[in-house]
Each structure stands twice: as structure tokens, then as C-alpha cells.
Image (cartoon, rainbow over all chains, first blue to last red; front, side, top):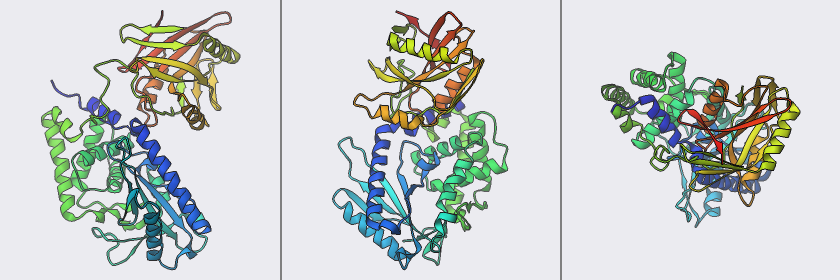
Length: 315
Length: 156
């Protein structure tokens, strides 16, 4: 029997809802709060308030693989160089969590991966240190310089820092939240990326989906909308410009090599072609999360975790 | 009060005193609509919901034929009951239909659809209690949202 593609995609989103992993989510929040407290205690008046900056903050996270990104904004005079800032935060976190977590240097962040707990849960939190550009300027414009520990792709080639505005990056998604189903499409592409071990960074996916919504009339059923976006990526990923909303000078498209862009274009073409040939193929690219099966077989109220319902109108 | 939907084999337990207090609150706002959220917990392989209380909204808009429940402060209040020794969670909604039957409107059905679609909601099948109110009588009716429609309950 043919698969109802839009129904399947809705089921994919349901089984990948972040709120289904409530216990893991609560543990991430708890560890994040510990880290914020520790950073505040260690750096005192040298640090502004750390804040969430990743997919959880943007409400585009899926439950299959997620971590928290924590932005740690420092004052201009806290460190004489960005490298010193980065190394100081690394040394502090490494010492604090030695024996309980792997702490490692990443591109612009310090990754903390806590050892699995009794439930087999692994908490991952990336701390991104940033320093304001000029003294006392951060509260005004939220701009920060990030230290680049190692360089990937073309971004920041020849320099050791990235100037950005992470608050603007988060707002970029939040401001687009009322656009019809934008975040659903972003989540579906993240599901595709995670289940198929694909290269593009989540940030790249977010920006190219927003671009597709800007350039195309994305409407219709969920499959119709996804297909329009897939076709946009297929046709444009090799040439599209994706400015970082945090700093238009940063070209996020350069974070993917020409080869990887070609592969992504081919991937999109294959998905559209094969799903059009046979609707069952949609399950290959966008699988359900088996950990949270749909309750079709046995009736139950389902779920059971912490929920906060949205503003709702009844009649 | 115990209610059942025999087709789905799902039950609801709600204390008579809680039902009375919900009716009292609804009547205070009559002839305008009013409502709130239902909190409780699941049992029996999630085939039974025990409704233990209601949280009334801090912000809302209402008229004789519509009611919009706000979410101001809701997260904090839900967090507080979730952190109690016996955690309570959001299980559904209630609202009144002044001078009308307690039958879900198209708006009500859409409301449930949007609730389930919300990423901040982990339950798949919320309960909806509608109180059909007039000056003398109150007729309550419970529903659950499943398979893109509502199913009603009967008293046992």
C-alpha cells in the first residue's frame, strides 16, 4: 500500500519531538545550570549572563541527537587575547569536570560530554566563549568575537577569530517562527541529516531553508512544502550565498566544501526522484524514531512528560 | 466520577469536588466563556488519567462564544506541580459553552490539533472538558483527541 507522505512526515516529527525525551532534557538543563553557576563564580564581573544559543533555543531541535550550546559572553578587558579567553575557559572546565566528563577543544567551543549515567543518558553541552568587541559595548549590540581553535572549510581562513552576534542568530529563527511550517521543514532536514550521517551543519540547514522560504512560494501539504525546499536546495546549494545573521561578513555557505555541496545537491535530487517514484521510499530518508513508537496499535493517552500548552482559542 | 470511552478503552477519574469547583469558576464568568487547563497523571499503561486539579489562566480573552487561554506564567506553575513529590502534568483543557451544548466546535477541534502539534507538549492525546452552562443547569462532557477527531466519554 502506498505511503501517505505528508502523514508519514507528520509522524516523523511527532516521534522526534524533543519533549518526548523529557528526562534527558531535564538533565541537560540541570547540567547547563551547573555550568552557568560555575562560570559566574569563576569569572565574576568579567562575564555577562551566559545564554542558550543552539537548536534548543531556536526550537528546531530533534530528540534523536541533541546537545545544548551555551554562549559565555566575556567583557573586553577580561582577557588580553581571544586565545587567552578560550584557553582559560577550557582549562577551567577541564579541571572542574575531570573524572566526570570528556572536555575537548572544538572549533569555536569547548565540548563537555558527561559520562553516561545510570539511565545510559549522555549529556553534551558546548560552551562557546566570546568577548565583546569594545568595552561595555555588548549590552548595546550583542556582538562578540569568538576564538577559532581550528579551521574548517573556508570560514575564517587566515584569521583566528569570528565576529558574530549569536543573539541575532537565535532571533533569526525565532523571528521566522510564524512563517508557515518553516521549523517543521528544518526539523525534517535535521532528521535526514542525523539518520543518514550527512555533513551539513545544522546552522547551514537552517539558513538555506529560510532562504528557500524567501525565494519560493512554499505551500501545500507537508510533503509539498518539503519537496519545494528540497528542489530549491538541489538547484541552488552550489551557488547560494548564506550570510550569517550575526555578521553579514561571515559567509556560512563557505562552511561546506564544493564537493560537499555537490553531494548535497545530488542527495536532494535523489530524495525527490525516489519518493516521487515510490512513496514508500520516504521512510528511507525520513524514518520514524523507533524509540518513541506511535500509539496506533494500542490506545493510550501517550506521552506523559512535562508539557506547556501554547496560547489556545476555543469556541 | 469515573468516565470511559469503551471504543478506545480509556478512562478518566475526576473528583466530584473538583468538578463542582470548575463549574463554580465557569459560572462566575457566565454568560462569557471561560476555561483553564487540567492537570493530573496517567496510570494503567497510560489508559487511565487521574485529573487532580485545574490551573486558571492569568491572561485570557473571552466573549459569549469564544475563549482564548493565555500562557502567562503557565510554565512556572506547571513546573511547580511537576516538581511535587507526586508529579502532576498537563493532561488537557476545559472551557464553558454558555447557553450551548457541550459539543466541540470546529475551533475546539483546531485548538486540540494545535496543542498536540506544539513541540512543548509531550502528550499525544489531550482531554477536553466542555461545560454546557445555562442559568440553571450545567452539563459536562469529556472528550479525548485522537486520530484527528474527538471521542466522547460516558459515566460509569
